[in-house]
Every structure is written in structure tokens, then in C-alpha cells.
Amino acid sequence: MRSLRRNTGIATLSGFLIVFLAFAAFAAEPVKPVVPKGSPAAGPPFAPRVPAAGAPVAPGVPIPQGPRIVSFAGPDRFVPGETFRLSWQVEPGVAGSPVSVVGIYQGDAVVSSPLPPTGTHEIRPVSYPVGASSLGYTLKARDASGKVSSRIVNVGILSAQHALRQLEIGLQADPREFRARMPIELKVTMGSTHWPMSGMEIRVKHGERTVGRLTGYAIRGPVNIAVLRDDGFPGTSGEYIVEIEYMRQVRERRFATYGVPYYSLIPTSR
Image (tube, rainbow, N blue to C red; front, side):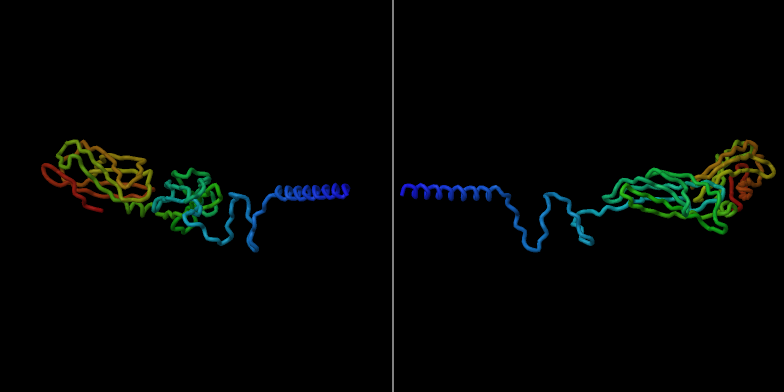
């Protein structure tokens, strides 16, 4: 009888021990999140999320843009043999990468590269297609992410004869009224062109008398003034003649000396 009770106690104690060990093992296992059927498994926290192709962009998040070409400009026209200037300004696009490479191209030919994001470049074309009326230049800009932007500017081709004909020529005297043997400062004004002209020769005459001459003169802006001095005005009626020679083409304009005893200048020809 005592043996039966002892065996029963041992069995009961063993049962409690087995239940305790099983409960401890269950409690030690990590709790797995419950994922509804058909739902994707949750990834690690703060993992980057890649939107599916064609998925809408969240409001307020800008899409990275390529380089922004603020400006790219040159003269309206140029005379073959002259040098002209192209200027540009490039900035990173909205939410874009820094600008890494800028270059100027003529067709597939590289004119100059690499260039800074903002600057100017002097160009002297040495050849161009026969019969061409303009030359096209392309500014290309690439950012660090590989995005590329471009812009084209066209520069017209102008003959020397036409360029000289478009030049507005004037003559001013200082003082405005003068008399015989009075020193006169003569100002030859040239302007209203939108293309560079260099290597010009300016001559001023009064009748058969040569007042003065300037060589190697260059026009670079809308208003240009060449100054000559006349100390030998004879005090007679006549004309001051302004001659401008450019690339073997000559244009003149005449200004009459009118009035007695004080004279002034009056244009008599275009």
C-alpha cells in the first residue's frame, strides 16, 4: 500500500514538471505578427519603399528635373571674318543634381567643352556651308545624375556691304557753332547695329582737305563715338565728308557747314 502511494506521488510530480517545462518553452518563443491572408509580409522598419511603375507621386514631393538653362544668347548676325560672343547661364533643375558638364556644339562638332555653368565664349567661324543664311549653336548641360538639357541659338550671316549700309552715321561739332580758325572737336557717331564690326577706317574731310583719320576702329555696342580735331576750318561754306571703310567696302555721309560768321553742321546725305 505504501509502495502504491509513493509511485502515485512520483507520477503526479513528474506530470507537473512536464507541464511546467512545456509552458516555459512556449513562452520563450517569439510572437509572430498576424498577417491577414492575401496581404504582403511586412518589411523591416524604415525600409525604403520603391513605388510601383506608374504609381502616383505623393503630394508635395517634387520630381527631380534636369539642368535649367536660364539663358543662352548671341548676336542677331555676324559678318564672316568677325568674332562674336556667346553667353549662357545654367542652374540645377528643381530638386535636381548639381550641374557637372556644360558644352557648346555646332552640329556634332564640339566648339568648346567643358565650360563653367555661367560664362561667355568668343567664336570666330572659319567655315560654314555655302549658301547658309545662319549658323546654329547648341548648348548642352548635364547634371550629376545624368539628366541632359539643351538649347539652340541661331546667328545670321551678314555681308560686309549690308552691315555697312545698316550702320547709322552721324557727325557732331563741339562747339556746335564755330567760326574760321576756331578749334573744333568732331565726333563721328556710329550705332544701332546688333553685330560686331572691327578693323574699320574712319576718314573725315572738308572739301579737298583731310581733317583726320582713324584706323583699326571697332564697333562693339549700340553707341560708338570716334573723335577727331579740326584746327584749320577756313570759314567758308562747304561740306564735311565722313568716309568709313570696312572690309574693302566704303560708305560716306556729308554734312554741310552753314551760316556766317558762325557755322553749324547740317546733314545733306544718308
